[in-house]
Length: 274
Image (tube, rainbow, N blue to C red; front, top):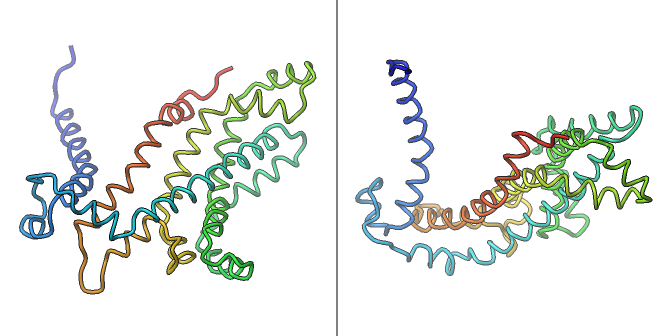
């Protein structure tokens, strides 16, 4: 029987402290979001005495979160779709290409993770403006797809290399083309890593603030983070409305995570064992 020692007590205290650090921001969101401004000013850390929903109504209606929510959803869905299609297709070539060509191109794409994306923000902004895409959500979609592509390719290629090539060879013997092999044999096997890509890339693009602020600021196409930032005034801020907006903005992220978390666990945990 294992004895309870002082080291175990220290570990438990440390874990409880770590849990409190992670829970505190969530508590602040709920506490401030569901209380009126005078109540928050009186006791910032207090618990809501009632469900004060005016913050959510004002943030959604007068704060313009409805159109911003649609813009964020369109940008995130389209950018993630591009990443899934291009990332999975490129990884199929990188993982199955014979010779050194595939490895060289893979290293070239993966090296993109070492380049700070801020370097290309202004040059691409000028390019998009010259192409007539200034203030267009398409510019943010293309930018985010390019920024997240190296990580996506790395995830897909690492998982693809675990898939036995015998599956594809058997399909090729049956007369399937390369496109049919990829869409009907390989793509279904990539579901675990696809769930991981959707979660990681989707959260990163949904929470992106700097690029939408620069590319879409001052237009009707701003995203949720930019619109919520607009609640902060020069001489003050309506924190109840801000925290209510943050709560509403976090709901889609939580839904996507809970839907695809089992694929993410399979991808990082066991992968594909053939």
